[in-house]
Structure formats: structure tokens, C-alpha cells
Image (cartoon, rainbow, N blue to C red):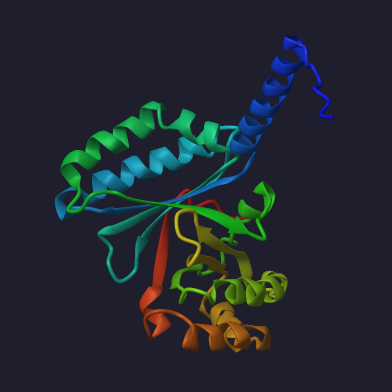
Length: 244
């Protein structure tokens, strides 16, 4: 015999309200990572960098912001990168309505040679706001590296496992300011590392640091396109340029 349990309309409504609230909370509780690439026309480069600097300074003053930095590529100075972390989707979306964000969007319509590229990422072994905002010292010659990794399907978990072991050791190196591995939101086989060193000596030490060898072995055997150095970007910070 099947028992039919009657649920009052009120209880039924409360259940779905609780479920919906949980979904919303999950959507807004996770840190949002965003990398934005701008390829700028030469005649607009100085103006664009100035506006992007103002964007960074305004965004880091917001409670919902974790970090915001702007760079140009050493080998391609017309390629600018805006690197951001926000507490959640809501905080990120709110700032898109800020006047400084609107200035960037308006200027982009005439100043770029290519459409804006936005890459949303999920941090693995995420840093705290305090760790993200660690800075180089005034006497340092900061070196920032961003490496894009396109893993062969089926090997991405191995890559994450290798980094899970190596990450704490990388972050403990005396010359490392920031080290973060992130996964593309829309493609679990794509990753990006963000590596900030106090200078070239610190970077060379990192390349010879024994825990890096399993990472190098993976990069030499399990990514789609070799050599892996093709995905390497040497970045020069121009905002906010905060130093100890």
C-alpha cells in the first residue's frame, strides 16, 4: 500500500524558497576571476593606459574587490591586460555600471584593433585578499609571468594534481610575491598561471627549484601545442604600482 504524505502549501513554499536561496548563495559566494585583453591602436595607447589606471585605482577601493592590476606585454606593448578578482558575481556586475568602467567600454569602441577578449577563470588553491594584495618592494625589479596551458583532453586532472603538490612549495619561495593557477570557466582543459617574482634572479631560482620538475615534465608531454613557452606572456605592471 502506497502512503501519500500531504504537505501544506506553506511548507511547500518554504522548501522552494530555501532551495532557491541556496542556489543564489552558491552563485554569489564564489570568487570571480577575470582576465581582460585589449589590443590598442598606437594613437590611443597612452590614453587607454591612463583610463585603465583610473579603473584599477577605483576598483580596488571597492569592498567587493579582491585585486585589480593592469599590465602591458613586454614584447607587445600595445597588448594590455586587466587582471581582476571579485568576491562574487554580484560585486563584479555592480562595478560594470561604475562610471570608470563605462569610460573603458566607450573608449574601446574606437581605440582597439581587435574585439575585447574576456577570460573568466576559477582559481585552484585560491589566495586570500591579503595574499593577492601582497606587493613587491620598492627596490625589487618585479617580473610577472602569465602562462596559458592548453591540456590534452584527459590529462587535465594530472596537471591539477601536480600543481596541488607543487603550489605550496612555489608560494614559499623567498622571491615569489604571488603564485596562482586558475582554470578556464568554460573549458576544463585550459589553465593559466599568474606568477609574480621580485626579480629575474627569483625567477631563475624558481626555474631551478626541484619541485618544478614534475610541472615541466607535464608541460613537455601533455599539452596540445609545443613548445609550452608559446603560451608565455611577460607582463609589465602600470597600475596600481603599489610597493612596500
